[in-house]
Structures are given as structure tokens and as C-alpha cells.
Length: 161
Image (cartoon, rainbow, N blue to C red; front, side):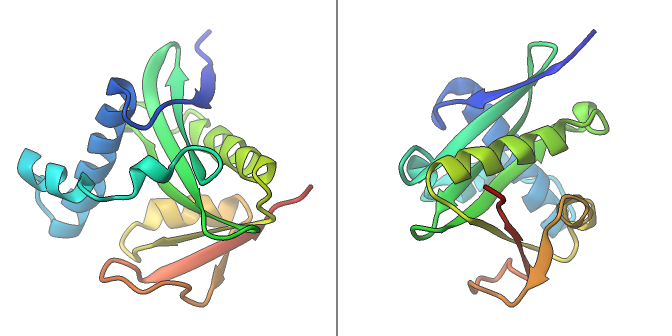
């Protein structure tokens, strides 16, 4: 039986880097309505604050399904009590296998361990499946807490102790 295993992973490891590239290619391609080029992915990942996704400023994790790298996600501590969910991604071949729920639970637990009592996130309106996932797992729409060209909507969830 295949099972999920989720664990912290250095954000610059080859596995994490490949997943981050897939994530960026997926969201950028969706936005541009065409595949992102390798150069565009490189540009998008340059200066994306990923070095901060380590304790105590955040965390990055990789999900493996049956031992194969299948998912990733992270969070960044915005302040002493608020963490921002980021780079949540499941490779298409592994979607529908309950990995997203486990990934969110793991990230929320890791954020609580760093003192977060609230998880926030921002996304685009066209990322309908992602928005459904967040709402299904207790995230509620909030006013925009940041402003960027690619931010249409924000969500938050209070993290239970």
C-alpha cells in the first residue's frame, strides 16, 4: 500500500528545488495560459524569499507518496503569531490521494511549534481548486493583508492549540 510521508526538507535540496520549479511552472503557466519557459521559472524563483523557509523564520516540507517526491509546501512567519502559507503544490499525478490535507495539517502543526496562532495565505481567483482546498480545510476569506499583482484574495485559519 502506498502512503504519504511528509517531512521538513532543505528548500535548496535537489528534490525541493525540482518541486518548487514544478510549482512555479504550474502557477505561472496557469496565469499566462501557456507553459512557462525554464528562463521564466528561473526568474520567478530568483529572490522568492525561499531561504527564509527554515526555523525560526519558516519551514519547507516535502511530501512523498510511496517514496516518490510528490508534494511540497511551506510557511513564512510574518510576525510572532502569524504564519503565511506558501508554495503548496501536489504534482498532478498524485492529486486526489489525500496528500493535500496531510500537507496542510503538517504545515499548520509546524507553524504552531514556531508560535503561530493564525495561518494566512494569498492566492489568485483563477486557482479555483486551491481555493476550494483551503475552504474545505477551514480557511476563511479575509481582507487583503498584502498587495501584489498576483494577489486577488486572502484566507486565514485560526490554529487550534
